[in-house]
Image (cartoon, rainbow over all chains, first blue to last red; front, top):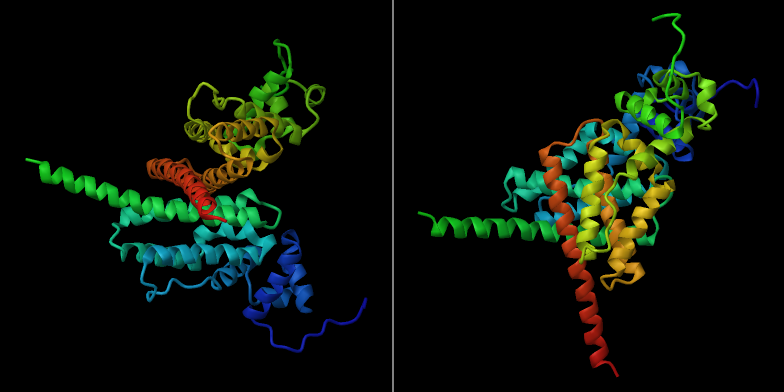
Length: 197
Length: 197
């Protein structure tokens, strides 16, 4: 193949670039570069730069592409707690599909528009259950700890059944317990108000 | 100070090297190298290599040094669940003392003898409460997810009050809920046995 000119007949656009970047990244995240992606696409590196500013921008696009596949928190789901549970389990299953990309998704989530949209949806679902913003943020933070930690704990290998079972159980225990804790705090606050002066 | 000969009057040993490495690492983890530590100690890089094999070995020693400060799970604490809770909160408080070193401690824990000893102690404490090894491992795994995630979520900044409150609450909810879950599973297993043929 040496010396053979690079040929590409399809139109080069962002979607094609992100798809190629995902292919490269799933084989080996470290090899995801503008050069390797242009080779995957059979275009020149210069052609790639017309669409993407550089490696960091490429990684950000890959993270958005993955997170946009997360199931949306549908407002039709009656219970906001169950909606959040479904969102988190959906996210875990999604990241399982991209073993080499865990780290990148975690590292880039704080600045990802799609991750922020998912967060907003989750918090809104909890507020629809009557939680204050502070309470909703606390629940969301606790759940985020659990799912981030579940990824970090298996860094560099696929999740096995024990990992998945533990995570699902811990998530249910955490959500159920936090729900009960919030209800109890309100009951005791109400009781205090009743006996107050 | 340029040209002034390096002077060190105290004896160079592993403890002195690890202390110096901790100083350097707390300022900036990336600058922790054999060269920067030898400069901190005012010794030659060659002298350092007589005691430590290289940067990775240096980092491993730093992680051991930090983790060895974790409060041991004392067998005198009556309740294994409370002992585990104390261990985890102690670990979190400890890692808070070394903001630049979170990542390193997390990354190296799987291979750290001291981390493995802490894990063994925690699991033994749960077994002393009547948990099977599988049950104890599941609880330990869930708690590990939570504390790892709580570190990763605040990557690059100090934990604030909301982070600490959420973590403490989530830990209690998780431990209390898992304890109850295990008890309920046993009750239902016992009930099934009673009505069995």
